[in-house]
Image (cartoon, rainbow, N blue to C red; front, side):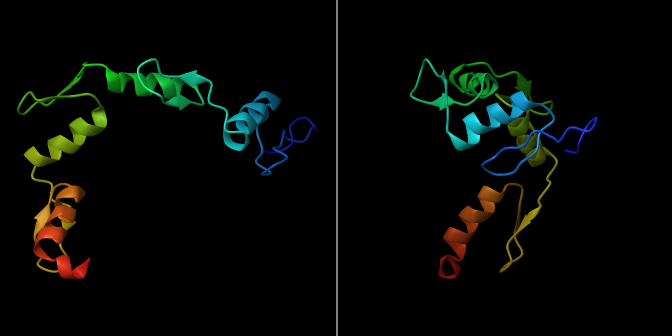
Length: 122
């Protein structure tokens, strides 16, 4: 952030990060320097810095699966997991074993492969 209209940008005294507005400095300090977590989940012990963080977390407790695969109709809670799943149908094997060159769609599959086939390298 730069000076605007001759005024210096509001700055965090603890870390020097600059902001556009003074209220952003206060929010930043509460969250990052004081660890304030006022938004608590009703279903578990987790607490969050922002209401948005709490809302994203609460979705995990729901049974909703709003993202459906066009290939097999399997449903997912997040678009991220749907995209990861879709790579299986597209045979998008980006993760390659450096030892035997076997390729995998997911990084977790490569890690499993390494533990089972090449444990001496771990």
